[in-house]
Image 1 (cartoon, rainbow, N blue to C red):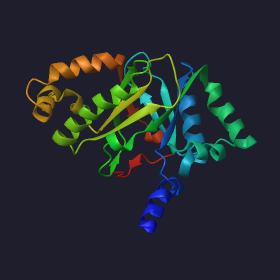
Image 2 (image 1 turned 30 degrees about the vertical axis):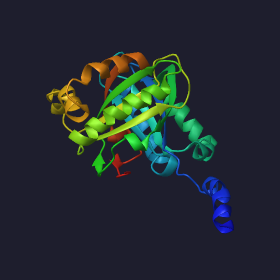
Image 3 (image 1 turned 120 degrees about the horizontal axis):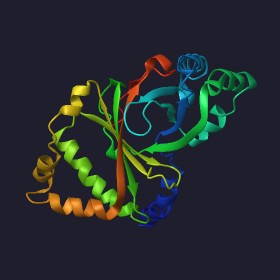
Length: 252
């Protein structure tokens, strides 16, 4: 009895002592090339990434924004990484800094936006190997103090796609920093062919097959109560400009 009691008392300490794997972080930097220097900008980005950002926590993938107000801009995405790893990754030497300033920044406009996104593995689906190609970005502005309720709604969405379309690959991410830009959460669909965009939208049908007939109107009401707005963009992976290979490994 005493032994069992001791184990119960020590259990919280044992759990706290175990290292919990951290969800991956992605540092996304949105860059705008100078309209008269796009060729030089791309050449500089490609050379810089292939010299300094090909592996480990500092590997970089580059995406070209193909829709919306950010069309024509580039996303310089470092990761998967972690906050602790950034201490070492961001400790660049003078040669690295000079290369960036001379071959990248000098060919871009003086406007830049940096965001940090943490993947949420329990509601993502990385169940098989695939290569990055096209990304559908669905970004949501969550209402203040409604994060817990939003997670409940998100869980219902996950169950729909996990049940009805388990072969499709997607990731969900939360912005690590507070903002007034409507960038709190993003659902990313990964797909190969643009024909995927023309597929029949069966979400309403699937939702009611998973959660019960007549359940969708209540979902819309709940979704509206926890969000302010949403925005969509299409991104195209630019392997030629990236240091990373674009290969994604199963994580589930």
